[in-house]
Amino acid sequence: MIRTDALRKAYGDTVVVDDVTLALPRGGLTAVVGANGAGKSTLLSVIARLVRADGGTVFVDELDVARTRSDVIARRLAVLRQDTHMTSRLTVRELVAFGRFPHSGGRHTAEDERIVTEALEFFELADLQHRYLDQLSGGQRQRAFVAMVLAQDTDYVLLDEPLNNLDMRHAARMMRHLRALVERFGKTVVIVIHDINFAAAHADHILAMKHGAVIAQGPPATIMTPDTLAEIYDFPIDVHVLDGTPFAVYYR
Image (cartoon, rainbow, N blue to C red; front, side, top):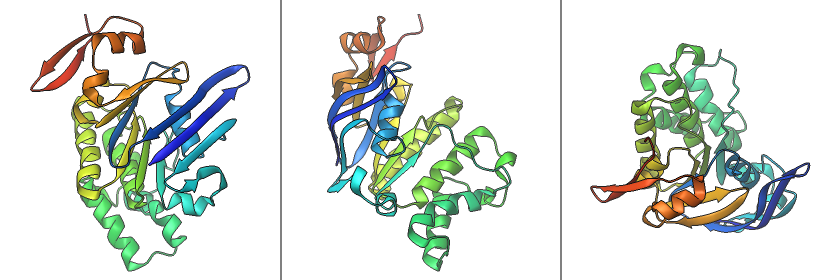
């Protein structure tokens, strides 16, 4: 379980994570939603210790994130930021192999190579593994970065907007892969996502933020109501149910 207590982060006079206390369930897929500037990405970054908190604590199971060595955290929790910057002259396999660094320190064993190959195959990248990153489409490149996270082989996987710049087909494909991370590999997956309908269709738990605070959380059925969505996004949203799944209608 990921737990935060009175977590706070500010930039100057602007508070972006405001006294957040929560418990993200172990297992399943949690989607963090909210309008732009709600604090979603900053919350994820603070939990992963990419950004230093100004106050409060974060625990990943029994580990106090602020007091635990980085290599220990990296074997328990993997994170992919929205702004991924890697040299384009890396091949796909070389990129995915970076995920093994917390385990091997760069000296790969046969087991490391097996895990890299498994991650490539899971994300349907085996045929592309010797291509350079700048030879890939946006969807292929995004899958390669998430495959790197899978190769890190952690219990917890945190992804900041993994659907960024993906078209509908590739976004749906990515969500099916993330769902499979939960069901096939037993991972706990936490994603920041803008598309509330993808969250409703694939997440087990939705956490909604506004102005740096958590204003609602629970299974999709409890979040996907007109009143709750209007509170989150500040405009009226209809909700319709299709095959048992609630979907937001906000295009009119």
